[in-house]
Length: 253
Image (cartoon, rainbow, N blue to C red):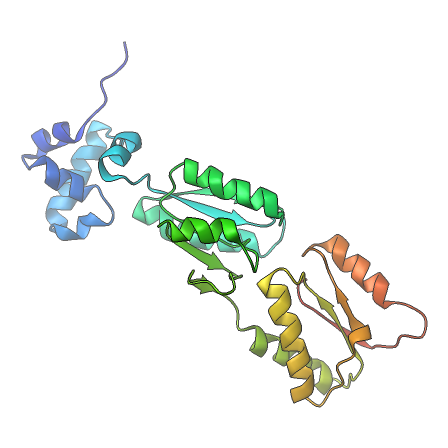
């Protein structure tokens, strides 16, 4: 016979407090609104009774699913697993679960996955695979879905973003190569439809001028994707007879 599911009312009866107090005590965000002694007593009773929250019922009541969509371009890229761990280290204590999707940096797939996440009712999206011009996520944000982009940004948009200081980073790397004695420095640029690729190429050009180095367009190879195969192709394109350079600054490893 199937065991009856433990409810908030059962915990309220066990602890002698109101159901709304139980609800607040078991909500990581609302917990701070009651005393720690009461919250701990309620949590202990919930654990003893084997309480498990009914996320579906709670979602219908609060219009929240306690899920956040996380969009990345390539799970095999070594930069993203630590980012995912960082995201989950913040979401999990607050009671949120992340739904991770991989776009492969394909526009149609990215647009489709935005719709998939919205259909799942996510409470927001952390987007690390966004394109410089990205109507699908811009539309979702305009319709009220909380969105923040990570590592990249949507140009001419009000969507908040967290990105690197590309100018400072590229300049420091180029200065290091110059100080080692290099003057003919090639640049392996990233895709120009991504803000990271575009900003790093612009930063390379500006840094070369600031450091009194010649910017040579023939020493710039532009990758179509941030992956090893494209990196290898770009290096092969640079290695032609008569073209001399002694170092390469890569927009992505």
